[in-house]
Every structure is written in C-alpha cells, then in structure tokens.
Amino acid sequence: MDQKQQKKRVAQTELNIEEILDESPDSADEKPTSTDENRKIASGKLKSTTGAQTPAAGKRKSTTGKRKLDGINIHAILLGAIVLIACFSAYRLYKWNKGVPSDYDPNYQTTDFDIEAMDSIIPLAPDKLEGHEDDGVTTILCLGDDPFSLNQGEGGLAEQIAAKTGATVYNGSFTGTTMAAQFATYNNGYILDAFSFAYVAQSLASGDFDLMKTAATYSYDESFPKTAAMLESLDMNSIDIICIMYDASDYINKRPCDDPNAPNSIITYTGALRAGAEAIQEAYPHIRIVVMSHTFCHTINEEGNFENGDRIDLGHGTLSHYLQKELDAANDCGISLIDNFYGSINEDNYLDYMTDYIHFNDAGRELLARRFVECIFPNLAAGESE
Image (cartoon, rainbow, N blue to C red; front, side):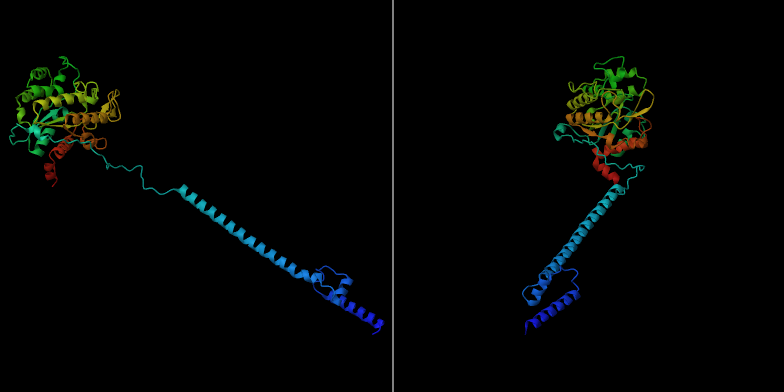
C-alpha cells in the first residue's frame, strides 16, 4: 500500500471515531478528549482515562446515597424516641396533677375511734390476807364525792355496783368534796377538808371520827352527819374492797396535781391519794383498794361558757395530766386504777352520759358501774354478757 492510500485510511478512521463520540449518550457529561488522544485510543496505544474513572465515579455516587439514607433513618429513630419520651412525661404529669380519687368525706362523723384505756388492775397480794378471816360475803365501801353521793337509790352508782356484783355495798361519800384538802392543817373555817379523802381515810384507819362528826354538824347537807355516823359504826374487818371515785372537782377547784418535793402532801391531788391509801393499807392490809378515775368534763370560764377540760390548763395541768399523775400514784401504792377518762365517758360520748358539764345521768352511772365490774369482777361481767 502506498503512502497516499495509508493517509486516506487514517483520515477515514479519525472520521469514524469522531462520529462515534458524537453519538455517545455520556459525551455531554464526560470530559472531552483531544484528537490526539482519540487517535491513540483508536490505535490501542492509550487507555481511556474517562472510561477508567467512570466505574469509580458511579461507586462514589452509590456510597453517598447509602450514607444519606442511613442518616435519615437514625434521625427518624431519635426524633421518634424524643417524641415518645415527651408524650410519656406529659401523661405522667397530667396524672400527677389529677391525683388519685379519695373516699374521704370531711363532713362524715364517726364515733368509732381506737382508744386504749389506761387501766392498771393489780390484784391483792396473797400475803396481805394472812391472819384475816373471810366471812364469805363480798363487802364494798365506796368513798368519794358526787358520782356516789348524788342520785342515790336504784339508779345510784353504789346501788348499781351492788346489783351487778351481788355484794354488800356501803356508800361513804360526801357531796362537793375533793380528793385533796384545801389547807395543809385543818381550818375550822373550811369544814369540807374534814371530808376530803386524806381525812376520811385517816379517820377510818385510826377509828377516830371526832373531827368528821364535829364538822358534819356545821354542814348544810343533812346527809353528812348520817354518813359520818355510818362510817364510824362500820366494821372495817368485814370490808373486802374500797372503791374510790372523785370527779374532776380537784381540777376545777384548782387543787395542785402533785408536789415532787412532798409526794404525800394532802393538799395535792396525788399526795392525798398516796397518804390516804397508805394509811388504810397499814391499818387494814386485807382490803383491796380500787380507784375509779375522773371522767371527761368541762370547766366554766368567767363569761359562763363551757371549756374543754382536756384543753384548758387552770394552773396545774389538764384533765389528762391529772389522770396520768393519778395512775402514777396508784402504781406507787400498789392499788388498782380504772381509767374512766378514756375508757368510759370521754370527749366523744359525754353528751349521752352527762346532765351538765360534770354530773352523770342514769346511763352514765350504769356505764361506770359496768366498767367497775368488768375490771374487778371479770367473771361476773362475762356472765352478764352471755
């Protein structure tokens, strides 16, 4: 082949390559190549750079799309978690603000309270009965003030104790008196001291009733001389139980509750109890002594209005303070105490058992008698309940 024909064939080849390049769909996106490079490609002396890079470029494009897809999924998950947490928190806050429905009714009234009485029931020690001859009859002597002395008869407290126990009961109480004396030494100008518990107990223990009988002659209460005479004639060896009950008159009359420096001072509530109980125990050790505490009551202020005795301190403590000190004194002497302040007539039920701020009706005296029997004669109380 001559040189002229060879040149003609090369020119034809270049023309064909240019036509192919013009018809390629990727020609607009790819980097143009020079005529010389095309010639080299056509002659097989040079690899197409664009062709070598195309797969790599496609690979990078695919990886970028995958990362973008993964990013969208992670963000969606995080956003969903945040929305769920926010919704849960809002729901909990709503429930907390709404609270829990309660059955509490502020207007509901009930008398069912869990109150524990402070009873202290101490049996008589067997050695106290040594040398004493039992006559086979249970005999009870009641000492105190208004709970025993007022409304004597079938509905009286002493009479109801007798009916419930079958015992012989003597009533040695004096109206308007107190456990404690007003004066440390007897004052003829205040005869009621002769009928306070410490003086009555001393008369019983000694057998000397001259002071009591003399004071009774000056009393406006006709029952005083009769009661003094009965006590003087009483055979104390026949007495099995002495039941002592004073209402809250010591509190109302502002008698001191106690004196730590003089525990047996007769001008204090608990000192008079100690002094009287010890005098009887020494003279008649066979007698079992039982104290029935005061109940709830009101005091009357200067304006004539009732005030709760367990909230008002008149100078020596409230009613519950007097009760606690009385219990301490009873334990010191080894004698029984029946708690009527919490266990019988209290702040919640007093309207059913009292006629005024301190005195009892028939139902109140029946309740007190029943409490005495339940504590001291439990077998009899069980028989009544059956």
